[in-house]
Length: 132
Image 1: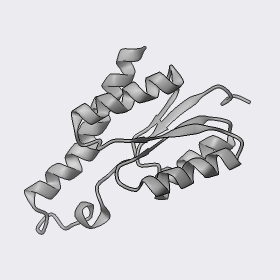
Image 2: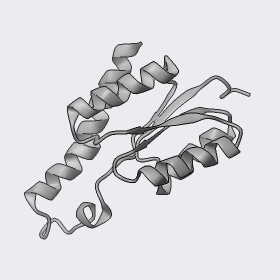
Image 3: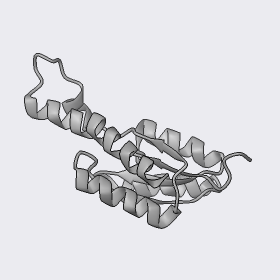
Image 4: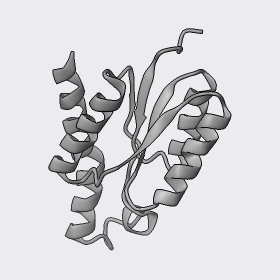
């Protein structure tokens, strides 16, 4: 199987689309770092579902809107996996804050969206590139 001995990090993978991506990777034999921000129970449930599919992984917490948290996140992934083959940037702020009309969105909500999406993606890719 092509994905055997492959390692992935999917941010925002404790629920929703991130969980679905994570479980599809697990079905292919990928070891997955299950990232969450606040819902630890959901992250552990995702890990259990990964293990039920015959793969493995671990749970990792980080607020990806904070650069130092991204540093810790990738340090933990490096320590556990040694390498990273697949990265999916999926984390985002809570939906009520994220999906608002531009006329109704506050600058704080805008910054939260940018920090957890664009900034987090940029910093993550820089971390990954530095490893290779």
